[in-house]
Amino acid sequence: MAGNGEPPAIRIDLGTTSSSVAVWQKGCYNLIRNEKDESRTPFYVAFTNDGILE
Image (cartoon, rainbow, N blue to C red; front, side):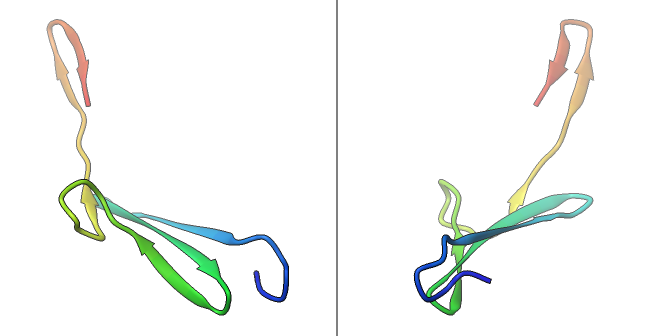
């Protein structure tokens, strides 16, 4: 783990309907928040006649 001058570690939690990202730095996790200031980000993919909508 990161600490004592080591680079930070990144944790990515990929769930079935949402995901979250955290950084381990200086002995604790810091959650990365999205543009809505939420720690979990829903994700989806839709297939349309024009292609893939993300």
